[in-house]
Length: 70
Image 1 (cartoon, rainbow, N blue to C red):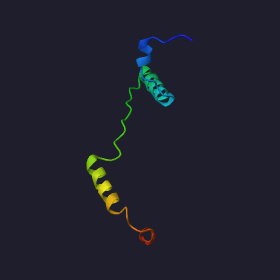
Image 2 (image 1 turned 120 degrees about the vertical axis):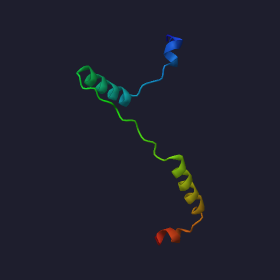
Image 3 (image 1 turned 90 degrees about the vertical axis):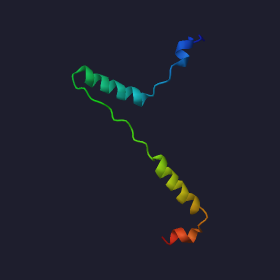
Image 4 (image 1 turned 60 degrees about the horizontal axis):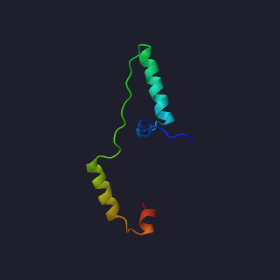
């Protein structure tokens, strides 16, 4: 078994999905279609996350019957 060079160990691994997307965009760019990939939006803002957590904590001790009546 051969040891990998230190440089190769420090490189992050690329997933197949990321590689596939990257190759598609590169192919389109090489053929004159200059496209951009949209970045993903954060699911919850810090403000909304605080509100959701406050709601969850205040309703954590509600009995099962309460939730079934909704």
